[in-house]
Amino acid sequence: DTGVSQDPRHKITKRGQNVTFRCDPISEHNRLYWYRQTLGQGPEFLTYFQNEAQLEKSRLLSDRFSAERPKGSFSTLEIQRTEQGDSAMYLCASSSFASEQFFGPGTRLTVL
Amino acid sequence: KQEVTQIPAALSVPEGENLVLNCSFTDSAIYNLQWFRQDPGKGLTSLLLIQSSQREQTSGRLNASLDKSSGRSTLYIAASQPGDSATYLCAVTGGATNKLIFGTGTLLAVQP
Image (cartoon, rainbow over all chains, first blue to last red):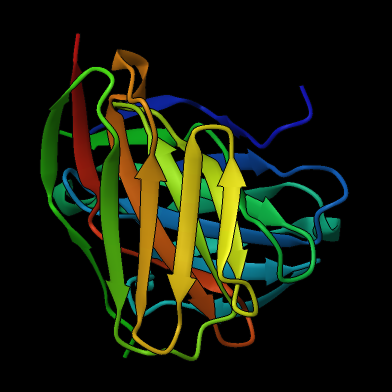
């Protein structure tokens, strides 16, 4: 399968715990995006990487959130001290230069 | 600030009917427009990408049009089938990072 993959698909955690999600983009894509989607809403942009450089972060990405893309390959999104408001679907997408974005299956986070 | 609106929010049609989904955006300075399909609890599947210089794109029973000057796009689905039932999302890109800005989607139900 050469599509975008995300792991885990589902994560249930208790409030205050840290969680980390992984995204593996399509191999030849240098652009990687993270989005967050809550029930009944369209996805909202969180952050963008071009190769290994994080070039844009949304105001939605509070200090508790951090993202990395070492060596311009896979990316991780970490949420520290989770809150119930962090419960959402976290989506990763990749693209080559300014072209169609392809999405992974998402990670569903539930914070109890 | 770019805002994307989709009308209607929900639509129910009998099988075989042709239908049109609408998308409008407030800032015409977009790079491209993308239509997605999302099944419940799943990630996004890209349906069509229209670049800003294009007027329409077709894929099978789907046809998407773009009128940048009026800030509108339509997705036409011909001969609808129950398998077309899903949420359809419209998104526009712009700016240096080409991040997607989404509407809230149209929930389509095709009745057999």
